[in-house]
Image 1 (cartoon, rainbow, N blue to C red):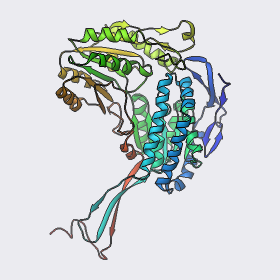
Image 2: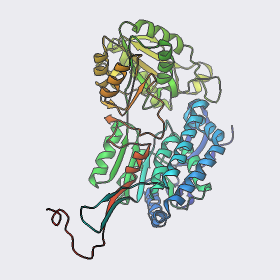
Image 3: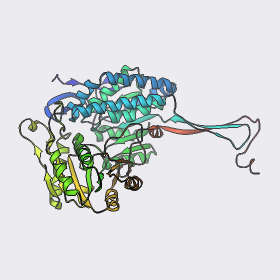
Image 4: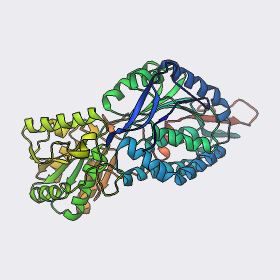
Length: 498
């Protein structure tokens, strides 16, 4: 392990400390003896400096032709490709998930960059015929200004890429506050943009905590759009703050994602999907498979086989290629997992696997928890309704497809869902009736690709989407243009009435 490095805020192209001089440490959740670096503990003054820098850079950047903006993003993606292994290892150290997953995280940023770079030569509007002669009309996108981005710790490079790349391609400038648990991956990501030739001030980083740095960013009057990914509770607060100034807002929040398993499902396929969906990233995904809604006729076999697979998951430091599941992100999150295990027991669910912290040997230096399975869970239990964000899955038996869909929809969230069945009719009924932003057939609830819209319904979001071309609507506004070359006054809806 190398000596910890001191990092600073990026403001107007310069690396500067927090005005207060305060810092915080970034520690490895798999081994808290490993300090990756110290980062600025920023406050409102630092945020104001960063917003001013972004505002100063905005006019020149928005007037840079979109294809040229795309070329910088393309070069940044190529740099990320070259540094993929280095950045993945940094991410495993600061976030905990295993190397196979952090490589995928970096790859997602690469993919998003190549996709958004291409939008620099599209950014399509529409042209339509006028109802009047000698008149032309069309619509175009226009940027909004300074974007305030607040990102979570579970995908510390992929999610910043979902926000920064589309914001830039539309002609906006950015201030990002990364999660305090995982700032390094955002720094690495932005360094690739700097090395690709991004002008100073177009992207600014202010590290710190939500109340001191995140809230001032949301409230700053020169921030025209806020994009937040995090908990539903905090997202509601962000929404209220933005409403006071009528800011544009994109929210991506929690999930309680169901996998429906019908009696005709291929159980070999189900087992692989259920274990990956529930315990991948230690269950710390907003799309994690946290509920298995299984037909009663196969539920016992399903539980037995998932239990057999899950108990063999190798838990440990993600830098070891043999390990399959890493730690919780911090002591607080581990405590949340333990709290919900206790709630599940109190509610009368049957604990058939796990349920405890791992503390022996090297585990004692990190925040490790066993893969955990509850069975005989009722749909209204808290462990079946509330997001846990840990390696805990609840199995709920049902008697029919209709009941399964009803149970699946009966939660405050609506991000991702899936169904395993060989019956094409049942698959199409589920795709129609599951009220989630994402539906999978014969696959778990995780695995979204960047070129389709990502987001959810109900308590998961506010209708905005990340990914795909739909994300451009978050970072741009429509402008309709009418050009009358008739040489006279023509009145729409009046002069064409006959």
